[in-house]
Length: 385
Ligand code: SF4
Image (cartoon, rainbow, N blue to C red):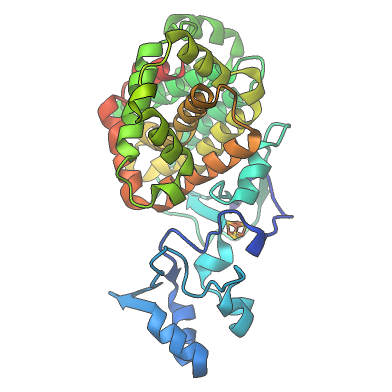
């Protein structure tokens, strides 16, 4: 097997009770079969707690979360009672591995750490050097997916590496790189849909000397304020009824509170323009580049199963990268200053958690993007222009 790791993050340490947004809250925590078998055998006080706090249905088991969404085993000091009373080896797989993730496509395992954890989010968003994708290989081929369409797989891997190279080409602004990646993946998707060879397309986007003329045709240099403001208010409207928004996404709750007030609904065009250009200014280049690479790494190759590479890219790009851009711009309008890096780290982390783990909100956001026109790269380019 081959193994690709997005920045082998060997020194990751969970900060436990110090965590500003613990992963022991806000989503469903499943219990794998083997761990559940062990939990059923526990007696005494812990055995009773386990009995009362696990729901089982159709062979699946999960913790019954408290009213506030937190894990029933999270104690008043922010520590895990299962870890304390039964030992680390008896945590369920979800609790043991998170925030690490891994998935296999063809003969490659893709592994990394999820930016939905604030420690990982800080690491990735402040990493000044281009993120590395480490490679390793061994002779164990037991997990190779034999049903793989190898021709498609090899083409997709070339498209993936080409996209990452574009995303990390610092001769261009991140806004230009996002535009190039969107256009390239859209073109690649067309080749997949039509069953044609994408070699010419890959060659075109592998040569940075072509980027200038491609970008010229996109009109990316002229700011489309109308599309952005319309999209921004649509996004705020979408979130206004989400239960527990103040906890899940306080950044959006604050914006809804501000822009929902009649005195703040009309904002000067120039103020909007400045806020959006600040959001994509030099000071925001590093984190936006790294989030783009993270999204490519985490989502692109998952397009293998349904042959929907463009959708996979947009499912990450829209709700995480484009939304964080919109929210940082709205923050600037509201506070007349740019958000701090701490604000952006928590924002990206929370958006990522909503998208990766909260299926209902995720479905609504994806649906909103779809309705707004994300299948049309022209729409995406207008949002980032
Ligand atoms: S989100 Fe990350 S740092 Fe926070 S408790 Fe979970 S693993 Fe630890």
